[in-house]
Amino acid sequence: MTKPTEPAKASRRGIIAAGLAGAVAAVAALYVIVGPNGNIAGTQSCTAALAAAGAVKPHATGEVAAFLPASQPLDLRDLAFLGDDGAPVTLADFADRTVLLNLWATWCAPCRKEMPALDQLQADLGNGEFEVVAVNLDRGGPDKPKAFLDEIGVGNLAFYQDSSNRLLKDLRKVARATGLPTTILVGPEGCEVGTMYGPAEWASGEAKALIESAMKAAGT
Image 1 (tube, one colour):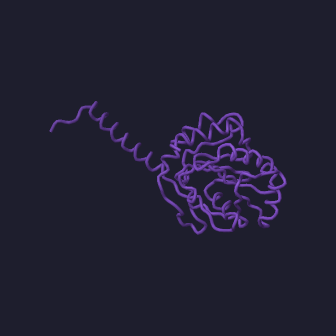
Image 2 (cartoon, one colour):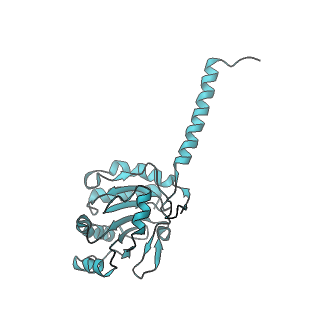
Image 3 (cartoon, one colour):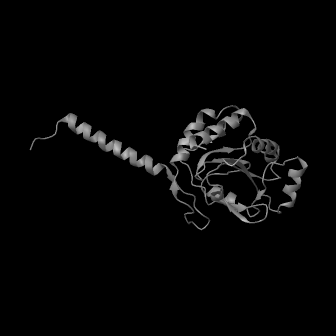
């Protein structure tokens, strides 16, 4: 039997390496968020979010320069909180919409400062394809945060809450939401596109360009 030549061996090694790289890339696009009991709360391909993360990267400048596009997008569909009426809500309920998920509290000064910009962003871009979902984490219930929002004239944001702070705890388990405010851009399939730790001027041109680039990449 004729032994393969060195060029043939090198070519075969290249094919094998390319195959392995493809397999790694496919696995890298699949991430999950683990529930409080160690259960997997959702599993799906996040390849679309990975593509959107690449699209937003050039737009992480100016007022949103600290925005971190996801290199390993998390499946966040099962993150849970409450609506204004106290009914349970998950990010899966926002399917087919790009969501800017913001975690805030009245005791957090930077959160209070950025709330008018989030309200303006919802007024400017909010529609059936995009929503700012600002979830209040005050432990004392909805009265205080609602009074604060009324006081500063916020009228475009729907009210969401999680006085149990379970949402924050679940995100901390996967190295997100290390403090407040934390804002996560989530694609229509429920996967993380990128995360901002700390406040931002969300009504700025840079922020809108970043969000619109994610929506365009997602086809919404």
